[in-house]
Each structure stands twice: as C-alpha cells, then as structure tokens.
Length: 222
View 1 (spheres, rainbow, N blue to C red):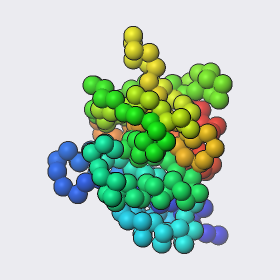
View 2 (view 1 turned 90 degrees about the vertical axis):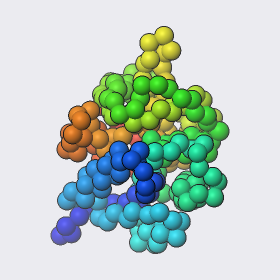
View 3 (view 1 turned 180 degrees about the horizontal axis):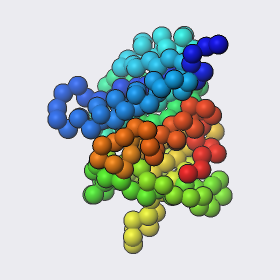
View 4 (view 1 turned 90 degrees about the horizontal axis):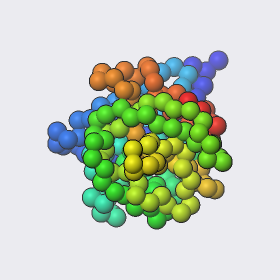
C-alpha cells in the first residue's frame, strides 16, 4: 500500500528572498508546506519559482497548483517577472489552481479585476461568510488576513464564493471561482489561523484539504 494517497501538488513560491516585510509570507509558505507534508495529504510537493520547474512537475503528474503569497501586490511587479509568467502558465495549464492572497490577486487581474487599498487588514483575523451558488449565506468562519489590497472590482468571469462585511461599506469579496475554468482564489491565508502562533493544525486548513481532495472550492461549507 502506498504511503501517500493525496495528489501531486505544485506550490508556486511567490515570496521575495530579502527584506523584513517578507517574514510573514515566508512563515505562511513554511506552514503550507508543513501542512502538505503530513502523511496521506499529498503524494509529492514541488516548490517552483520558474515555468521550467512548473513544467517538470507537470510531467511528474502534478494535479493541483497552489499559488502562494508575496509582500508585493500585482501592480508592483512587471509582466516579465517570474511570478507573472508562472501565473499565466498555471492558469492555462488545465490543472486546478488555488491562488492564496497574492496568487488570488493574479487571477483576478488576469480576468479584468481591479484592486483597492483597504486599511486594517494587515495580520489580523476576520470573519468570512461563504456563499452558495444562488448567493445564499452558507456559514461563517475566521481566516487570517495579511494584506492591504482587496478587490475593488471582481473579474467578469469570476463569481464570489465568500465575503466580509465592512459596516456601512457592505460586502467585499474575499474568495472567488472562475465561471468555467478550474481557477479559485482566496484573499486570506487558509494555511494560518487566527492565533498569533499560527498553529497549522487548527482552523483554516480544512479549506486547503477540500481543494486537495476535490480540486475546487465548490462544495466547501465551513
């Protein structure tokens, strides 16, 4: 009997290699890899920083892609930046993709979405409400946010999967899926929790586990 039963997973490392502002995202990446390495969750994990490495993992049978976070936002990188090149390739690969934070921004940008700066979302837990296909509210849970940019406008091919309510400002979309492609994005860090210790074994990772099993956010209920 094989030791691991889960899928081969490509993790796109979008972190900067220098600078104190990248410490949180480096920690999030470490937590994600720790979670994925647990017995039975994945078969192999390929951490990539180039299209060439992505293609090698494809040939090895990778069937899930997780695009991780970065201290930058999408408007701060050039179109020839390796992160932009990998994101475009991943989105055209046909492999189910989950974009986390910066990774989700890349998906939204690709389909005509726009960002807006929101204050007060840097390293803080927030209550997230999940939506059904008809827009009904399925339930809530908390996730860790570590960004100052959320969608001002969702890409035309994307549908909301979860929102946060911001008082008089109403709902802001924080998770979405493509209408026809297997592309999904969350503007928070499901690999982390609301605790300052970011304990990987509690709330949040059930969403990643759902994606690993099903290759989609469809059917996820908190």
